[in-house]
Length: 453
Image (tube, rainbow, N blue to C red; front, side, top):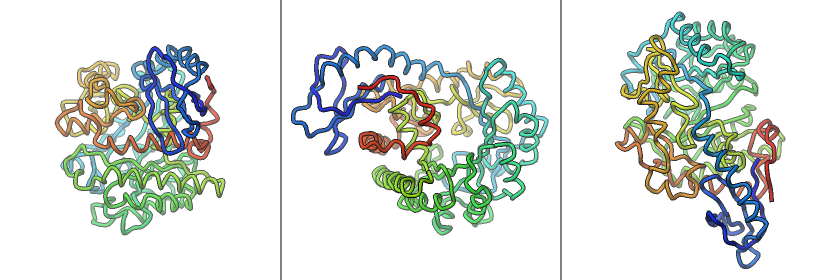
């Protein structure tokens, strides 16, 4: 785990300079944006001074950290495949990244087709020690739960499985099955009240998923593989702290408070303001930290935890949207219900980004296809403002599909101002020694101190 110093010191003659910025009234940040070597320094020691032994440490570790960052950005292997076993959905969320026509009239995999897909994935990972991660995702995977559960039974010793669901079709016996086979489960829930949640999590019948989602949380009873995914929008942005408190009472170990993606034009209508979103996410982080301290029962805000990891242990992060190039077509890909392989689910509405069909060709060929290479070629070095931003390898300027839909894939992130505020707050949490309350215990246990001042 990389760790910066907290001493008051003075800048010396450094070959490749550190940049300096204010975290808040108490702390100042020294940072090498290229490899995320950093130091947090108090601002109450008079002149800002960087001691020679700090400079020596920086010079000593620079090449190692440069290589580590380069390998993480360009040499990480494929490790996760999202499978969308059906295009259809029993919900009609206003911000869904899948075009409405596909969600209503799209195709569904048969059991035989899903078996072919999983067999090909196994072939691709032959000889790899770690089990590949398979996440059933997209529209609503439980519309074809029988073929999913059959596949999990067959392949659970060779693969790690996850399911993302709105829970409208989840039954108690399904929960027992998921627990038995140690399947990861993500429940979609946007607010702690039906009134707010059902404005954005809308079912085809005109209601919402609140009642079923809460029932699912009760059934799972704090299951270790459980998480909740909240899509932050204009309806719920000022209710994030309330949601954290509610989920903590339900023993949910992790929640993701993710920004709505603007891949489809209709999502623009529910986008929250950057500053309002940042203020409320920070409030939610403070709430989660206070609850964890008070009760010793942990609840982690996953997307904020990933920002912390991007700073203290950059190569330990697993949510690959916030590194450049992103994980799409690199560390993960998506297989759609008709077999098309796309870099990420966000590209489902763009046929030009298919890298081939898994029923007809190999994953290896998809990874070397022109569309996949195009996504891997989107790097912060080629994006105006990002190329000079101190936080470029902490944020990663997501999302390429979002920016492609807006007319320019090489444009900075829609939520740029939000990301900046959240990253500054993460440095503040590090300075105040709060990391242990904001990361999962197992994340901390797996880290090893590489260097410190």
